[in-house]
Amino acid sequence: MIKYDPKSLKAEEFINDEEIKETLKYADENKDNLELVDKIIEKAKERKGLSHREASVLLACEDKEKIEEIYDLAEQIKKDFYGNRIVMFAPLYLSNYCVNGCLYCPYHSKNKTIPRKKLTQEEVKNEVIALQDMGHKRLAIEAGEDPINNPIEYILDCIKTIYSIKHKNGAIRRVNVNIAATTVENYRKLKEAGIGTYILFQETYHKESYEYLHPTGPKHNYAYHTEAMDRAMEGGIDDVGIGVLFGLDKYRYEFAGLLMHAEHLEAVHGVGPHTISLPRVKRADDIDPTDFDNSLSDDMFCKIAACIRIAVPYTGMIISTRETPEIREKIIRLGVSQISGGSRTSVGGYCEEERPHDTEQFDVSDNRTLDEVVNWLMRAGYIPSFCTACYREGRTGDRFMSLCKSGQIQNCCHPNALMTLKEFLMDYASPETKKIGEELIEKEIDNIGKESVKDIVRERLTKIEQGERDFRF
Image (cartoon, rainbow, N blue to C red; front, top):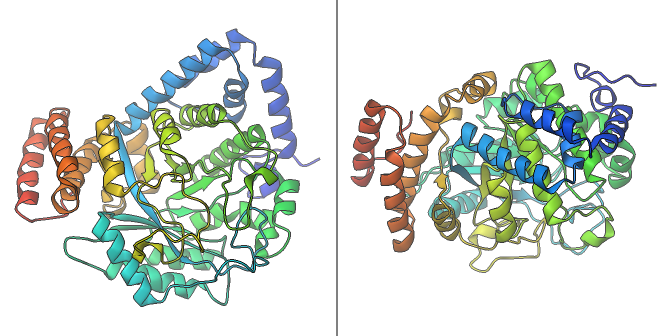
């Protein structure tokens, strides 16, 4: 029998099937043990996280009062670590050429109905200008796995192009990268190119299901894919983002596996995941989500988010435009700290006046513009943040995590959020959004603890009004 070992570098030892099954059994046996549930909630209140086994008990618990306690705690922990800020980003699809046979993705190699497209550097430039004109400062680039059409050199050229574009007052200040598992050498190249976070979704931690869902192509190799974050860290990338595609397999198994992956990164590298994403299977070109019989209800999806927040309190949590505005509103309260806005999931989609659907990776359920999303967030009491300062000031990896875990990161993030929001209001916002935003900034300045920092922020806000840009703490 394979032994569970969070410090192992072997996928089947740190994501151990037997351990997950025992965890689910333990959770089933104790889901009505309210004394134990209370103990776990009390431990979670210490803001130091929970083990995958403890968190699985909370996820299994069906007591309505306890679920409300979990939700309230998740909301408070999110505020303690990240305040009322929501970081804004957009995905940028570079190419949908792919050699893999993933059953849930329309980019799979056997799909003959989807038009294949790869952006030239000139097209990348045009997409970036379109994104800058919306107000974005942070991108997540996406590409299918294809060593001929999308080699690492192509990705590096695109990153260089993205960082080089300065249009009007626009600039992309952080490029996160979501591409297939690769080598330590290639991760080093990405690090040298100045990427922010390297993101890779596991899709499913259940090995048998994983191999079935990835029948052909290099992604079929479960171990190589699952061990990618260790190679990324070895290649010098400080910040990594993990996630599963909920709906492919049993959600409780995925939940336990996801937390075990976080524990593994902490045990081996001393720093857990910078972000955890929460995507669900959605309709796309030749993909019908009802083909997968593991879909989960909106209520359970929200409960998973809350349990992740209290189990891994320091991590950034991401929700995409796969979800409707209604679900995004619910789930943001429970711990999400980053969302996309104005997203298009097609290759070259931002330059099109009408949203193209022919090369989309999935259907977008939140079709609002970035301005509308920013407006909505501010009305709900959140500060939309376009800040990229930590990455540019070297506050990454264990340095970021130590600041985050101690709560000190707010001293930088809160004023930076206000200054980058001010930039958005001056350069891109509609009159109504600008009015709401100015009132929010004025109110939020009072929440800055130090008088000296308040004075600096006020001074810089005036300079932003006068045309200066890119201030940061």
